[in-house]
Length: 481
Figure 1 (cartoon, rainbow, N blue to C red):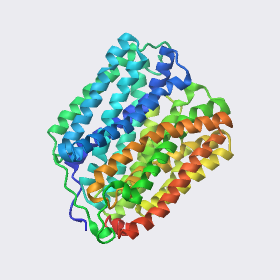
Figure 2: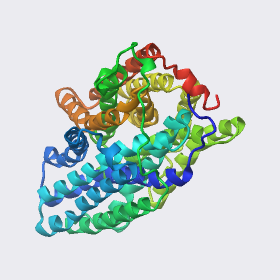
Figure 3: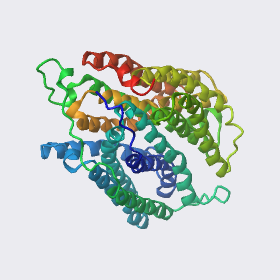
């Protein structure tokens, strides 16, 4: 079914991944904005969380607008304007959002600030709807989920660097960091970001990215004879996949959101010493994604085996380098190199099959959370940060499984999955609520439940796809295993 001679088109893929970098850069920089806004506008903890809610809910609102417009014009919006224009429009919407930071800072308006972030998020939602299927499209189908993983790895370079650059722009260097900060200082970094969005839009205009969406004809052989499915909702792999994306983004974001509170309350950490551990959590996602991305390269099987061990430690090296530039003490982190081995073993065991990988990594995630819950001290901190390693490759696995076999409903399915990113805000809120009822240590049970559903989905979806005549191992064998 797939064309094996088709190679990844790097000329198209490279401009595409710059967009993934920005998503990460902004999402992680929000963690720096929260304390700045909290001080400047004298906000409560709940009010300061509006930053995250605005940003994550924008994805959902954006997806709903997208679907409404598609229904209104009786045609999928991206199919009408094309992939390339979809990305360009998305970037320009985000650029418009960053412009709001200027009047917001001058008027000292928190409402305008978070409205600006909301508009940036709206632009991101359109970019996501286009870019995720496009990353799969610019090369052979069988390495599509690995290309998504690689794009995710670039995204996490953004999440690792973003907070450090934004905090440098706002506070100055770590040594000379001032505690006295005004909202005015937020203007410049975000205006520069807006200019960057416009530049990338111009670059995409002249890139070789396909302007038109490939028309996907629905493969009716996978359905019951004579049955044409009217909407994406009629595919169980998609409906269950939407819940999977919701809980996956939920456990990924809430594990990180609640880590500072755990370290302050249970381990008496100073707030200023927590940053490197949050950075380690997001870097863990990068470590896992760089490992998963090895499959997307057209190199010999022997060289791939070496890269499997090299890539994660290269990513870990980036984390150490970035933190040494920020003058953080690195001696605590070397032991983490041993934990990475567990993730490499899981990666090898999954043999590139997305359902098997989802199952193995979800079980490992449950183990990491339980170890964190039943231990104290640094062991628990590393157990919780290692959740990042096991979340790392789940997005592309779920995405690839959920839109498999959707035919002409693929874009609609992609939009529905992006909509579920709001799980990041909602699951964090639920875990915070459980922490208030019990304690922060026990609240990680919420993450365990999320991973349990993902393991269930991994087992169930293989059967669903088999019933539609899709064999997951066939997808895999094409990628050189």
